[in-house]
Image (cartoon, rainbow, N blue to C red):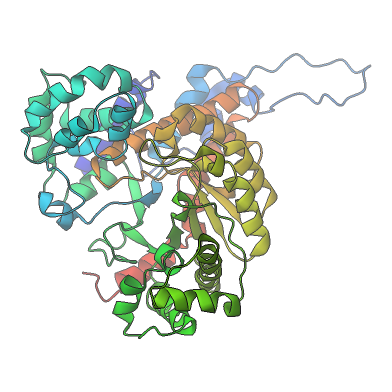
Length: 512
């Protein structure tokens, strides 16, 4: 335990230096900063600032008091940063494969290469291509047949163009923190590869996520084929139940085969959907759909008698029109969502920006926020979680979460899409919408290593957002400090009922 605390204190100092903020003393994680202690630590200036602003509604004849000084940079930001670094973080969205699968190396389809370039394989590869790198060269970078050291010359011409994006910063921070290398270059690439090999050993998921990033638990949307992954680390890698194949397609083979139900009618397919919820609703933290990559999220409630003829065509492998397919998707979407609502499972929906490159229909994305509001109206008992800030249309999504009691915003992925916009969104959310509607972080990665860098960027943004609100006079310091725990972990614990889920997962048949 002592070694873990020492590592945490060292990480605290490194992050404070990276923020260009004064290095803080070692953090005692057993004694968090209290509201009273924080104000006491500020002295007279801080206590005066806690009064916030003078009452400007007094009669004109009443002399206005002297302006109250807000806490100085050295007072508020250190206390806020210390609290943000101390707080455990709930990670509400990842695509991590299991550690045992990762250790299989390139035998696993989600591990294109088992070397340092794997850190570039999710998201940053797209920045390289949009910067002008030929896709054939990126394929070589991610190839297991190219020597790891020989990959740097392929990257080097484009590195200056991408190194400052959020995607690249997450990778750079992770390389620095995990491998002790400050900058990628021809002179350091062998050290990076050696660091990769030394790090990627049994137990490295817990070392990176819990010990280094101080992530309490992750919520994983499995991308390896199973609608629900029976994880070997069930309370660390908590799982979403994927519903997209229940209504898009639908994917009859994948979902029906485990159930033993022979699907010959729409009602049979409804039984398949119920089977998955009966089996996994106790263990799943939420349900998840990324169908917004294919259409808007404007799902209408379609009665079964209208959907049945289309489903029959699908079963018989007859052609269906786009309008018919949409009608069936709409009907089955609500079948899955109504099951989730009945089991008190939040419904996570992708909104906004697309992963990848040269493919995003921006005009369609603009409609996501309006469609999100309509979903909230149509199903007031459903807890909707709208992911990725609907970037770049986050102002519209903020209006949705302020208006609708059943709307929540998840900032997953946002800190590396546009870290400045994410920080600004957090500031606006705090002064606009209830704070319990906010989930601040999800790494959204397949490889585990960049999650560390992304988490550090998020903590930096959270600390800066709160500090700026204090310095600008929108919050007093005590209120800013009081927001840290709800933002970083309490909201997620409550919305997803994580204590209850962890208890169920410990007793799961597959739990070790």
